[in-house]
Length: 157
Image: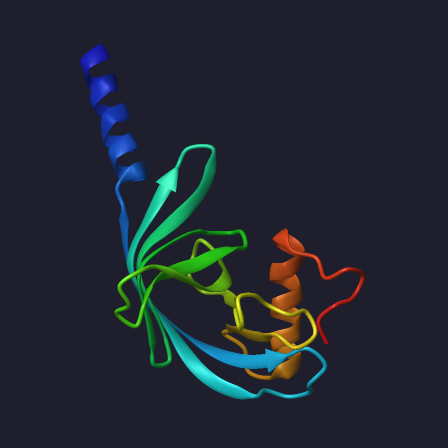
């Protein structure tokens, strides 16, 4: 009986902690603070593995492609705002590309794209999806920001 219980526990642990293969593409729209409407549309593609941790958020390791930009050796936590970095477009060294929020189901994503070493609250580019229009983009951005990020007392407009 103890042997059977041990086997069940080991199988359950293996099933829980075994990496899950991710190959997912999500449509994104680009918006910017204070500008109405969608600026452009693109796609984000995740190719890698999702790892679960006991008492902490899961994380992703793999390649992220956004439009023509490919980020290899990316590693970031899920369900929280984290830095998306890695070898960008086959560069020799790792660099930061954006802050990223991806939920653990890989069906919602928001990126704060770094320009000149950082991101500006009032001029920064935000990619988010999947959404159909500017209002849905703003709602999704605010949902993700409220998780781990606050813009003073303003909401993204």
